[in-house]
Each structure stands twice: as C-alpha cells, then as structure tokens.
Length: 354
Image (cartoon, rainbow, N blue to C red; front, top):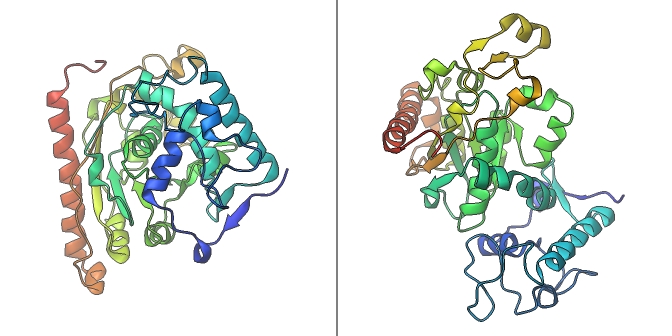
C-alpha cells in the first residue's frame, strides 16, 4: 500500500470553508488537479443520475426541486454508495490522501470514522445542537466544554456535532489525555481522527494555523466523578487553556453538554482495580461489571450541545499571559458560563431520555 502524503505546517494549503462543506455534502474529498472528478472515479452526474447536487444531511433535494431518496434507497442509492466506497478504497491503495504531522487523516475521518459515529449521534443519543454559529467560519477558535459520562463519548459526539452542523464544514481537533495515546488501537484511531496530546505547544500550533481546537479542562476529574455530582463542574485547572488562547489571539467558545452524565451512572469506584490496571478510576454502575460486556452499553439518553457566545482574546497585550489575575478571571468567566448554561438546559429538558 502506498504511503500517504504528509503535509508540514509550512506547506499547508488553505481550505475554503465552502469547499469543505460541499465535500461533506457530496461525500467526496478535495481534488488536486483541475477540479474535475478524480481518476477512475465516475462523475457525480453519472452517479446521481442528475446534476450532481448534494444529498447530505440538510439538503432539500437537488434534482429539479424533487426530494432525493434517502442514501441507500431508490434506484441510485446503492450505486452511489458503491461508487464512493470504491473511490475511497482506491485512494487508500494508491496513497492519494493526506496525513498531517499530527497524524490526522481527513479522508479516513470523513468517510469512515464520522460515518461510524453518525448513527450513534443521530439515532441513539439524538443530539440537538444549538449555537453552532458561535464557532467562527474561519480562523482559529478554542472550544471549551464540560466533561462527563465515565467514558469519553462526549468528545466524539462533540466532534460529530461540529463536523455535521457547522455551515462552513469545520472540523474539531480535540486535545486528549496521555492515557488515550498509551492504549493500543485507540492511540492510532485518535491520531487519525485529529486528536492530539493536551499540551500547550500542540494546541498553539493548531490554533495558529486556523484550526478549531476542543479542550475539556476538567479532565479525569469530570469524566470520572460520581453520579451524585452530575452536572457540577469540577476544577478547571490553572487556566492553561486561557493562556493558550491569549497567545494565539483566538476566541474562546464555551460549550455545554447535557445528556452525557446519565449514559453510565457511576455509583462506585473500584480504586484497587484501577491501581492494578493503571487507570485513573474503575467505574461501578448499575449494569457494569455485573452484566459483563452488556453492562458497557450506554443508556440511550437525549443529548443537547449548546455553544455559547465567543469570548474574544485578541484585544489583550502580549504580556497579559503573565497576569495571574486575568488568567483567573477569564477561567472563572468561562467556567461560570458553562455551569449556568448546564443549569438552564437541565431546567428546560422534559426527560433524561426524551
């Protein structure tokens, strides 16, 4: 199998927002030639049987105003999926895909990982997204979110929410804990999905190149807290994410997730087992470990993800990052915004499951 092309930061080509959104709707990646179909791939008009209009989520039909049959249904559904699948396999075999120096494989993420997560996002957790327009259409931004759920499914659902709902088709690059990159298989998948180590250097480099970066400052304290403390934010550290945003001059977008706390109600922590396995905690829930693998199935709660108004940081002087009081105030502002929004969403929701 041919090697993928690695694109250093200095040679990174800017991607148009509309281009990425169109690529997501049509299920195709950016071409590098004259803009036509890739070699060996049928033109969209031949696949769709019409003018090549998109058929992704949110499209109202692109063939003379008539609604297009759902993907996989109708005369052209399986041909379309087969054509996209064959084109993807050809790119993997020939190496015609790009991987950046962090290991992010946009082609694999777009056509495999997002496709695998989307049914869970849409059908199982039925995620409702609000305020997605608060993430800028271009340039860097730091999304700061609460963390919960015993297993980090909230980060994955957050990634799908940005990918599928942002009008500019932006991708979220999540900062992950060391443990993620110490686990076999998980390490490789996380890298390919665009996750990187939660350190200031990597975060700044991503922000400076105009990426949307996601961070969950509570870390293991948030995701591993007992069910009795659900929706109560834990400590946000020393404000490292604020100094990162200030250095890069990018806005901070507070984000609140409701629904993840109840997928694995953590009623106990087997600390001895956790120490033996080298884990920060070992959860005990009403179903795990009592039901074995079946107990690892999350409860089908109804999720809401709300992005708040961005907090600008580009108006501060460069030496502001050395001001501890400013760091504390901005950190507290972000934390209080997220906490207040969580309480508001909890009051509004009718049920944990509906």
